[in-house]
Image (cartoon, rainbow, N blue to C red; front, side, top):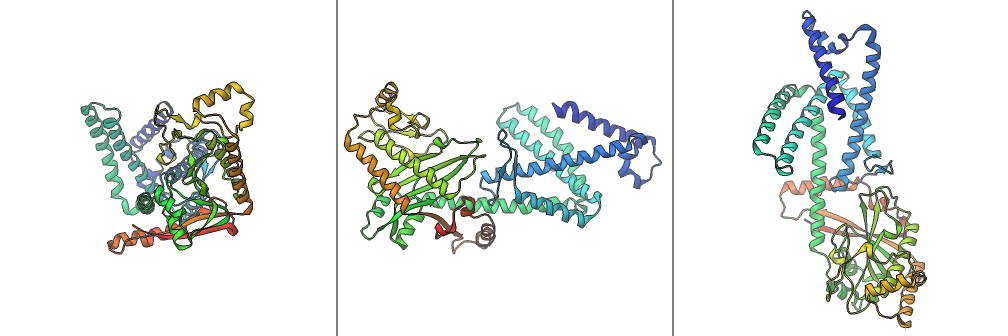
Length: 477
């Protein structure tokens, strides 16, 4: 609405006015033509218009900066760019954010371009190709949307495409004709950014596929945990991984090199969700790895884009609290020959599912007992408690099961008191020996340089160095 009824008429009137001024003053010198806009303004309105033009330039610059922040945020979500620090500035709008690294880069780039080229004419020519290419890309994307999404008649699509692309091709040719006088600057910057995006995404996808193909199966985990030479040391080991499901290949690698693990192990995956906040009671999703007596758990920690990651000690306190709730709920509602099946709304995660074979009934995560509700609190509402017990088909609770819950919770708390160690995978990705030269350059040099100069995981997670353990592994892709 604002574009159609405000911006478009204003721009048309401005261009029509400049054209009328040029037709009236045919004897104008060639050097005065670039300033025809200000020459056509009445002298009494010159300074107000000049101030308005400056304000407009500031608004345009701010729009470009905001667009750069938003683009970088999307690239982070798609794993197409090295890690950067993203600060959310609004509780209501997810698109309002600030990225210090991008802001510094834009500042340096603006200073370099201004000092190098000095004149605004050169910068204006560099800006022209950006505007024209945006128009061309928009036309191409709109054609695809009309064809695949809206399913418009093919003849209307052809007319739309021919009319717009023919006009924009003329503009593009005119801009490319002056390519060496300014337009090459944004094209060169875009090429560098595209190279970074392609390299980072390519290697990230290859690495993730490698980890998925080498996920440790349940039988392999059981064999690892039942090894006779495996020693259990006191303490809680928090193993950070990017895999939402399954045990990462770094775990058997660690046991093979050092056959020692902590008494309680939790594999943690931190995920950001496209919502402002995630309530603490809904933050953690747990699954216990068989056999249960080895106290190995998988956990997904979900955060909203406005949620701040707690400091390491505070994170452990909350994690352990809800892990104990999970141990209690697992014994209360997941015991027996017919365990429950859980499906999460955000994504189907097979490693976080259990089947109930007789009825095939599905229970969603939102329907599960809220972790903050203790068993004693439920007893205060006998109707609610009886309905839940009937719903879950759980038998009468005996003293032995209660003691088992209490014992498991004490074991977890005791190991936390013995000390917490944060284990992070320090993986190195290299190209296979028989790979071609281009792949070796991309993986071994460009990606390696980007990874070494991006934010490290322990800094993003605020992990103290004194309690950090990095486990090195090399992936050949």
